[in-house]
Image (tube, rainbow over all chains, first blue to last red; front, side, top):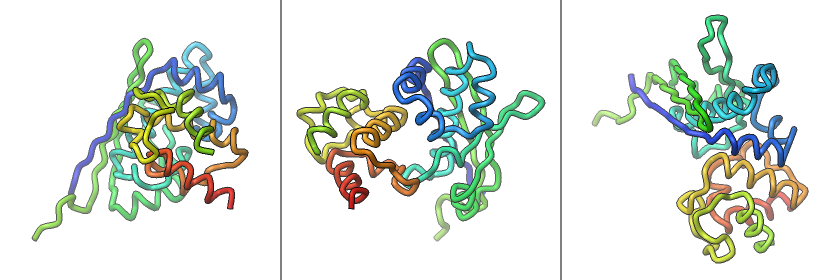
Length: 133
Length: 78
């Protein structure tokens, strides 16, 4: 089994600027309907929630080793369990990429404070990172 | 086209260098462009050139230099 980790840090005010500049096009390109609904349910937290979710998608790309592939951000979705914990759901070609890479499990942690939001993603794979000679 | 790309990089790329004097093959990520800034650059390019980047082009290498961006736009414009 191999383990990979990905981290990303996003400035919340930059997400607010993108939203002001590109509006719905920015939202629809990056986020699923469920993510948009959750983020906009609390107007005071919308930008922080969107920033944390963008950080999660970028951290997931790093943990999956997919930075060099063409990936639709909406295929990496942050879902909130009833317990309040967040988890990742992969869809479409990204889910297939993960299967091809032997990804067995993904774990996500999100945090935001003030103007910054961050995410860490850990992935486990059934394929060893370094082939044995 | 290159001048328009430079203008968009100057406005949205959040580069530590002046976009007007960047080499065409210079690495934009090394020049300070974050993944979030690259999304803004992509959306601004779509608006400027009236096109849409398909999923398979939403990758680091497409936005890593002025030359790479120009190549992608030319490909999309056919």
